[in-house]
Length: 472
Ligand SMILES: Cc1cc2nc3c(=O)[nH]c(=O)nc-3n(C[C@H](O)[C@H](O)[C@H](O)COP(=O)(O)OP(=O)(O)OC[C@H]3O[C@@H](n4cnc5c(N)ncnc54)[C@H](O)[C@@H]3O)c2cc1C
Image 1: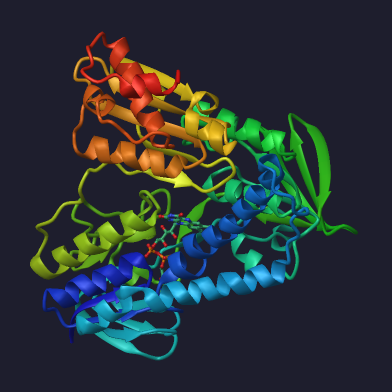
Image 2: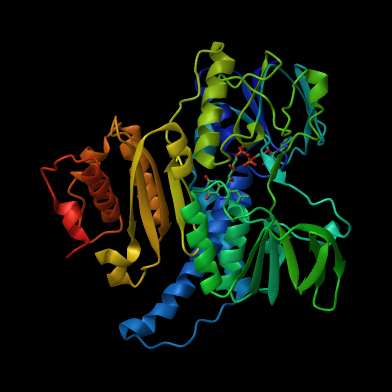
């Protein structure tokens, strides 16, 4: 009998197993496929590698502006996929997770196939393993949500990018959330004709409204068709070009053709094969496993961590969940999830990122001061020819606490991350305004926007450098 059995070898499962092993528990990790889960094999690492290739193409297109003469960049997609595979292998080879998990004494069962419950303490895997454990931590992650319309089986997901032998001539991307915009942006840079379809009124619906508007405008300017509020899809069928999508709005029917249709309409928990009912584990209305703040499920000996809980579906949160769930599994519920500012961003062109409240949410809950600096007025973006975008900062008037930061443009993700550090350190906006950030840098915009908010609050600044940056 094990002390802790962890299901799923993604970031949540690996950290849970490592932590349980470190705390002295007899621990086993079982995963359907490769160690590393989606983050290493099908998510951030390979997708960022494609996004880096897209960036190189756009950088190459700038060379002539700086007097460097080379031809138009030409992409060899299969060679790029080779490079992506090398990167994935390299990241895996250099990951310390595997050696740390081994040295924590964890038994690792890779390629075990799907595990399912027999009873609250027993699980069997498709490969034929039977494992019994006092505590079980479920970290099976999630998978792309499918459309349920006729012909949906003809569509692809982001994962199918790895099986393509060349860049499709045209792609219709259905879904304007984080995954859909990345697919659209990357393949636009690779030369595919992109149509991005969003059923709601704006792409990136969970971002600040200014971010959605700026990214949609930049996408349109780069040649993509962006259709927001397009209605609903009726069906797909094979067509001479590849696929035809039929859709309608208010009774008006339309159709379009593309080489490929990629569906990115959200994420569902990977629970269908687990036979959760046999263990008494309940799911919530959205289909994710319900947990309390200690990550305990409705069954007292079973915990859940990572994407399967349906909270922020990102690697840092999965890692934190894994750590908390394992600590509580071994030491009996003593650690709560931390309520920390969580920077979120995406490596599209232009990048976008955020931390904290959107302006609308902040206004609902606080009396706010807010300022926005457009990238076209900052020195570094002008030097680098990357003037699309802005940085917006929101603070509470009474407490001067920073409530949110929203960025579109070059290095947006790094800028929002710096704002997150300021928020986590409880810096007030006037404190941030007085940090002499290096000049000329992308991060400098944060000091300047903080100085503008500070001015609105009628506070004096001892150091005006950040404010001066933009008028240089
Ligand atoms: C295209 C894309 C880009 C992304 N980009 C980013 C990014 O830039 N930054 C970021 O932070 N996050 C990003 N994410 C999200 C990130 O990948 C996930 O949040 C993270 O991988 C979740 O970790 P996890 O451990 O919960 O699940 P996963 O990584 O999904 O791992 C779960 C593992 O469990 C296995 N499994 C499932 N069911 C069973 C079962 N019954 N038995 C045995 N094994 C099972 C699965 O095969 C898988 O290996 C991205 C995701 C996608 C799809």
